[in-house]
Image (cartoon, rainbow over all chains, first blue to last red; front, top):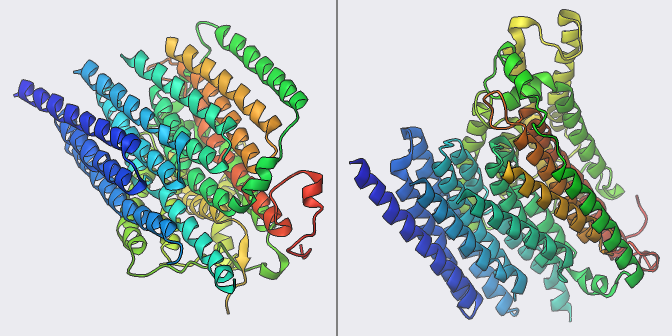
Length: 98
Length: 95
Length: 313
Length: 113
C-alpha cells in the first residue's frame, strides 16, 4: 500500500512539474500577451494541482490534507479571476478608443 | 522519496527562473506581472515540496499565506491601471 | 540535492538584485522586487526560520509589492524625465569602490564567524517553560525581548502619524486613498466577496497557532490588513476618515494595553514588562489580542497613504 | 553549516549592490528599492547567523529570528513612509526628482502645507 502511494506521488508530482515546464515554455515562446496568459493559467491550475494531489498521501494528518486542498482552491480562485482582469487590461491597452 | 521531492523542487525553481526572463524583457507591463504570478505559484509548489521532503509540516502554513496573497500584487496592478485610465480620460476628451 | 536548491536560490536572488539596481525601467525593477521577495521566503524556509518565512510571505509577497506597484504606476509620467538624469562617471566609480569595500569586509566577517557559533538557544530552552507558550519565537517576542516588540508597535504608530502628517491642508481629516468606483457585480467584487472571508479565516488561524507553532500577530495582522485592502479595492467598503475617534482609539489600543501591562509588572513583579509568575501566559494572550486589531489597522492605513480627499458629510 | 556560509556571502553581495544603487540612482523610488535590497541583505546575514546558532534541540537560534520579524515589519513601515513622502513631492511639484533644478520649477499644486 505504501509503495503504491509513493508511486502515485512520483507520477503526480512529475506530471505537475511537466505543466510548470509547459507554462514556462508558453510564457517565453507565445507571440502575444493573451496567449501567454493562456499558458500561465495551465501552470497555475494544473501544475500546482497535480503537485498538491501528489503530496496528499505524504501528509501526516487530516488537517494538513485539508490545508493542501485549500491552497489549491485558493490559487485556482485567485488565478482564474486575476487572469480575467489582466485580459481585460490587455484588451483596454490595445484599444485606447474604448 | 526525499531526493525525488527535492529534485522536483529544483526543477520547478529552474522553470520559473526561466520564466523570469519575461520580467527582464517585457515587452508590456502585463507580461512582467504574469511572470511574477508564475513565480508565485511556483514558490507555493517549491515550499510544499521542500517542506514534505524535510518533514516540516508547518511549511504548509507558509504556502497557505502565499496562496491567500497570490493575487494581491497583481490586483493592485490592475487597479492602478484603472485609476490611471480614469485620470486620463477627461484630457483625451478635451483634445 | 538540498545544496543544489540553495545554490539555485542564491544565484536567482543575486541576479534579481542586479536587475533591481541596474534596470532602466522603474516598473520592471519593481516587479523584479516582488519576485525577489517571493524567493527570500524560500530562503527563510531553507534557513529553518518558518516564522520569518511567514512574515516575509505576508509582507514581502503581499503588502510591499502592492505598495510599490501603486507608487510606480502613479509616478509613471515622470519616467522619461527621470531617465534623463544620470549620475556622473566619477560618482559611479566612487560608489563602486564603496560597495566593493563593504561587500569584501562583510564577506571576510562571514568567513571568520566563530565556531562553534554563540547561541542564546540554551537560555531560551531553559526559561521557556516559565512563559507558558510553546513557540520559542513568541516567547522571545513577548517575554524575553518584550521591550523590542513594544517599541516596534510604537514605531509603526509613529510611521502612520508621519504618513498622515503629509496630508494637504484641504484634505486634513479626510479619507485616505482615492474614491474607489468598482462595479459591484464585477470580477473584482466577486474575488473580494469570496477571497476575503477565506483570507480572514487564514489570518486568524495563523494568529491563533502562534502561541505554540510558527505564526503570530504580525503575520496574522498582515493577512487581515491585505484582506481589508482587497475589500476596499473592490469598492465594497470605503476607507475610514482619519478624524474618526473610534479609529484613533483602535489604533492606540494595542500599545496602550502593552504599556499598561508593563507598568503592572513594576507593581507586581518588580520590573517594567515583567510578568508575575503564573500569570505570564494570560498576560501574553491579552497583549496579543490587543495588538492584533491595532497592527491590522496600522498596516492597512500605511499602505493607503495620506488622505487625498475630504471627508464627505 | 555550508548553507549558512553560502547565504552569508550572498547577503554580503546584496548589501554591496544595494549601496551602489542607493548612491548612484537619481530617482527616489529606485533609491527606496535599493534601500530595501540593503535591508534584506542585512536580514539575510542575521538569518544565516541564527541558522548557525542551532542548539538545545532548536533548529536555529530563536532570538535573532524574533528580531528579524520585528525588523521586516519596521522596514515595511519605513518604506511606506518614504513612498508617502515621494508621492507628496510628486503631487506638489509634478516631478519625482531630488535634483535642485527640477524642484525649482513652477509648482503646480500650491503651497498649502
